[in-house]
Image (cartoon, rainbow, N blue to C red; front, side, top):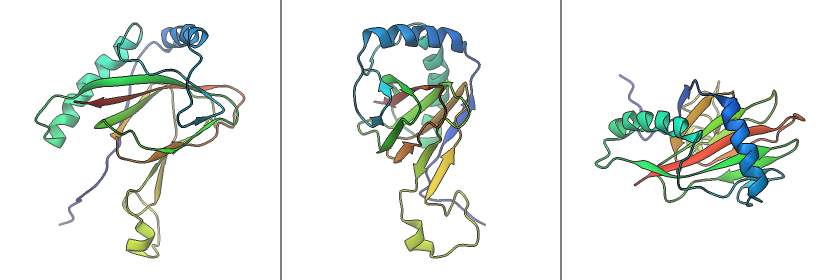
Length: 185
């Protein structure tokens, strides 16, 4: 029998949310918030928000129910809740450098607008698998150094906050818009 131990996970689910309401609110926020520089290069990242408001309540209500399932899988004693969230807009050539999300347990991203070739999110294996396994005949989710995920509208990805990740450059003239967030105690 083959058992997986010490694995990371990525939870993915398409949500059915009204993206037009999100885009309208994001445009308003961008006019009032000059943004911040964290891991983003060339794009705009809003200041972190700690209180949900419309239309984002619908997103976090959906994520809260998914978090119950994840908390159960992880056997967490306490209920985890939203810590903060922020908006990312990556224009042509913009990207996010490798980073983790400290002081949280589960992090996530929700895609609002994803034109073609707008940059994949890439997760790095916590272990140097080339050192551990040497040469492999075919890469898969057990032996790869990097795992890529193509963004799509209404996709919600959740992952352990310790999992280092980055976003490839947007190669489209249209902007990629996403909402990132952290959950914890």
